[in-house]
Length: 225
Ligand code: A5P
View 1 (cartoon, rainbow, N blue to C red):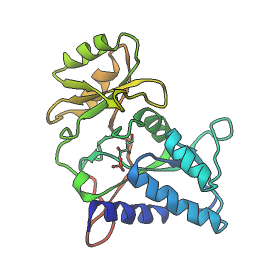
View 2: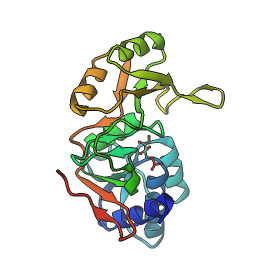
View 3: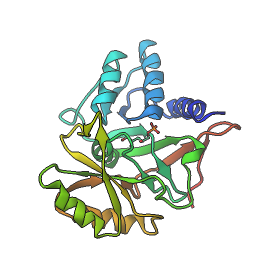
């Protein structure tokens, strides 16, 4: 099975967790896209849910598929969020933000009763860090924020798109940071967020409640260690 097929497989599996009447958080990225498309099919068949999106990209897709949207003026808590990840370890720590949506993803995840992560099996690792950690920073004097992040022993690259600096849905920049193998995700998450100019980083610690992994034998829930 290719990674692409596994993404479809886990997205389909995640649909089984969605019950009528729920408020559902919609993740961002190619795996979440399969899930949103599947949800769109159910909605077209009359399935009742409301959703909150983690990016403009996902919101546009939801609108195209006539999936009902809501917001935090209407709801206080999200029942379940389905999102992808760039890396997952066996303690369910994640690196997210490959698509640049980490800030809204973390806000939505932290307001969700269940955060279900759907990944192909290549994303499950012993230790996080091979995938460079996205850190969202404000544009104002961003080079000084970059220097402070590098003082935490990281090598950083400002993310580019179409010949210019990539800008997030929130009007910020992303630094992709190589910290090598991350021994203590919780500490790094905290230290990064202490730096003025850092808005949020892509380490998600103690947030995922379930991880669904694709494989040739079928989608399965990862056992937490
Ligand atoms: C978006 O910013 C990310 O956090 C995605 O959830 C993550 O990059 C996974 O994306 P794919 O499903 O496209 O691999």
